[in-house]
Each structure stands twice: as structure tokens, then as C-alpha cells.
Length: 454
Image 1 (cartoon, helix red, strand yellow):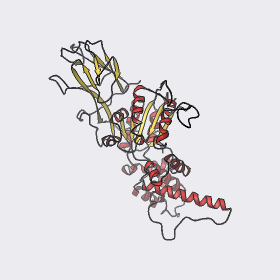
Image 2 (cartoon, one colour):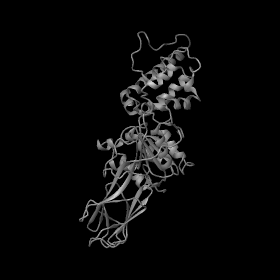
Image 3 (cartoon, rainbow, N blue to C red):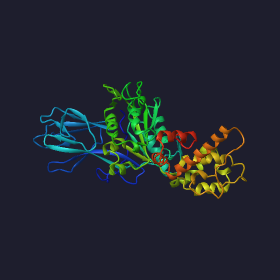
Image 4 (tube, helix red, strand yellow):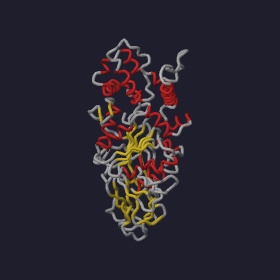
């Protein structure tokens, strides 16, 4: 696996604490000495190999009678760390079990003889100069936060380090995942996208890992899961915060071991894919609330990129309008429309802006058109004027007229539902009492949920 490039990390962060309020962050790992008179000493794992033993030439010198001269080493392999015993007299133990070699997990306890060390992560803000470009793939922005994101994505794309993308619905997490894939050495391989919120809990394990024929009722044939399909490419797990707690350990094991079992299978399947995940929630806060496993969080957040909401980067709106609607569209829009765009809070973020631009395109050269309804989809909860209701057509075939009225109702209902739930699909499905997969199909039918690249 490709090693992580050096990224400048401040040294004043608290051990084991997540850097809060930082848009760009990266993990560093270190060993903390728990015994001897030097207890509390921290040894950063900044190189490819960290050697531990009694001999003075080791990186970590443990002058203790139960420690061998060359006791063990910790070797970096991409964003994983492998402990290897070097034929020590008293052995190397990991979380109480003797090992010859094993991969470390955050918080693991290493014992060399009677000396203990803790394998601990830190997540710290990344200091990086903004890119000179105002675009990266489908991402567009000239604001400093966006150009810093461009620079970091370009920096980490050649690596296999896992990336956590955080942001509200519609901020472009899918576009960031696409950019990482296209800039990576795996660009010729598949980009497999899986939305953890779009599949019912009873089916999600099969979707991720696949199944064999007869594994459960209804399994009439073998199914290849997302992890297996992503072999040689990139796996983008969207809405990872919606992944059920009971499935999280299985995903963690698959990512750690780079192999998994299809449901009903007795032999493992190996896979090699770059893992990118996205969350609309602060995943660290979810771990503290007990809704997400801390060990999986640290496995996924080697780099964390928080995409800003559109209301926090309104200086990018003119550039985005031109990107979505054609060159110089912003200047051709009536002044009242430009004022609306700059004054709006954009709860649907870039995705909502794109839909608004599609409507605005048709009025750019017809300034006399009314613009009051341009952003109507963003404020659907406002009570309609007296007498306003869905209009039915009464001339024509009964079925055609009825179908048209149903379509109008469904679109209006779904638009208001998304606004009330601020684009949270899981919450919307619960409120509407619909299966999430069925809700997604309806939203796609009416163009209310488009690809995350928008």
C-alpha cells in the first residue's frame, strides 16, 4: 500500500482527543509508555519502522530486565501498523494475547516483558496552503476553505489512506469522493458507491458483503457485494452514520483484515480497495453518544475533510451559477434574482442551488418574468395563499388526468418533506412511514435527489 505523505501537524494537540472545529484534520499515532520511571513518555510513529528493545540503537529504549535487546518493532503499512516480535525471550503480547505479528487497533495495549505501551491516536488540524485553482473535478469554489480542501484532496489522493468526508446534505461529498478516485492510482478501477441509508437494515449486510445461494430465505443465487465489486478501485460508503451498530464490527474486521465472508460462505474473500466514507453528522460526537464505534471511527478518519455549507461560502455562488448554468450566466441574471441568491440560506446547499440555476437559466434573457417563485422549493413550509391548491385537469382520459394529479401531489409532498427534515433521508422515511429504499426511488423519480456529485 502507498504510504501517507508527510502532512504538517501541530504538536500541541491533546493525546487521544479529536481536534474540534477544524475543517481539515489528519491522524497521527504514537505509543505511550505506561511503566517504568519514564511513564507517560510519548513516541510518535512518524517513520516506516519503530524498533523497541533494551539495546541503545533502538528507537524506543526500554532498560528493563524483562525486555530483550531487540524485542519488537512496529511497521507502518499504509494507514495500518503491524507489530512484529523479534524472537524476544519473554514474548510480545497484544491485549493480553501473545503474538508473533498482528495489526494494531486504536487503544491497543502492547506488552514487552513487564513493560506496557498504549497505541493511541490523535486527530489534529492540518495546516495546508490553499490551491491556486478554483475547481477540482466537479467541486467548484474560490473561497479559501474550498481551495484548502482542493489542496488536501490532491495531496492525499495518491495514497490509500481512508478519508472521512463530513458535511450537510448537498455540500458535495460525492463530488469529493469522485475527485479522490480520479486523482488516485486506482482511477482505472471501479468507483463503487453505497448509500448506507438507502437500504433496509435487513438487507444491508448482503449489499455490503454479498451472499451465497441459499444463505437466507429469498437468496436464490449468489450475490457479489460492494466490497468485492470495489476490488482494485475505490469504495465510497455514503451516510456511514446510518450504519447499524451491530454491523460496524464486521465492517471494521473487513477493513482491518482486507477480507470478509459472504453470507453463507465458509471461505473468505480478499479485497483491495481505497475506502472513502461520508457522514452528514459529526462522527466523533456520534462515538461519544454511543451511536458509533470509536475503533471504527479511528479506522475511517485517517484524514477528515469537512465540506462547508453554501451559506458559509456565499462568495462562491456566482462561480457556481456559471458552472451550472453556463458562462457569465450570473451577470445576465436580473439583479433581483442575484439578490435572492445571495440572501438565501440554502438549506439544500449546492444541490439546491443547482436546481435553482436550472430554473433561472430560462429567465436570464426574459427579465420581465416574475422571480418570486424562483426559490419556491427551498421554502415549501410557508402556508400557500388562500385558494391555492393542486390544480387538476378535467378534460382528457380519466387515467391520464388522475396520474398527473398524483404526480403533482407526490412531488409537492416530497419537496416539503425534504425541507422539514433538512434533507435527512432516514428521518424523512420515518416521518413519511416509508421504507428508505422506496423513498429514494420516489425522490429520484422527481429529480429531488440527484447524484452526490452535485
